[in-house]
Amino acid sequence: MRKLILAAGFVGALAGMAAPIFAQNTVVVTGARQDRSSANAYFRPSNNGPSAIGVTRQADYFVTPLFVSSDSRNPDERIEELFAMLSATLERAEAEGITLVAGQYTLEPVTHANMRSLPIIGGNRPDTSRVQIYARIPLAGQGSSVRATADRIGAFKAAVPATGRSFIDAGTTGLAIDNPEQYRGAVVRHIAEESRSYASMFGNDYGVRIEGLEGDLYWQQASETEVFLYIEHSFVIAPK
Image 1 (cartoon, helix red, strand yellow):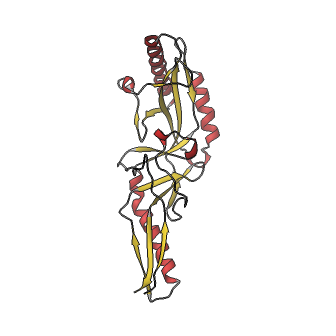
Image 2 (cartoon, rainbow, N blue to C red):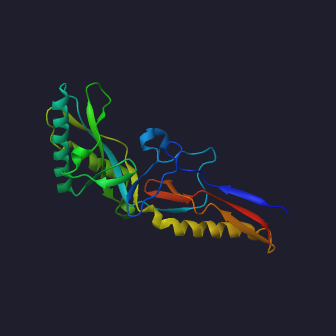
């Protein structure tokens, strides 16, 4: 019996482990993977690239990383200045309708009540401490663009008053989606339709067996405003 095995997809990983999807959470979509630190690399591409079968849809948000920092020499002063500016950032965000969120995998709102629980890391210069958050802005249809969002964030951070030697840097604007797992059914339907289409090319005596659909759901940025969701899988075409 001859079989034709077609493989599609790659395993998404952080430090060699698949990244799980949690229902009802907002997750960051990684776009330029090669530019991200390992702490933000939510999957690792193989040489084969992503699956060609999946679902492309508009993301739910633009997200821009913000680094609230202070480079005062005194460590205690530095931390207080950092959180004073973060507090001012929260107040400005509320006034401008921008949501501030944080997290390496899933994104949760930042508030005055929980902001001091954010991890403090070293900055790019000596004697610098910072926290990383994201400014989250909903995509507003076809008129949404990275440039307009970056301009808005630039004006927003410039309007936040500094305390002492505190300051804010902004990173590259990316995308985020709510509850990716809700699209699993649509991804599976696309895989089923595509695999049946391939099997039909061999005639009515051939069928298809799909493997791997129980695996994790993965995603990556597909365009300026769209994400591509897929499941690592393979299908086997063989005589019935």
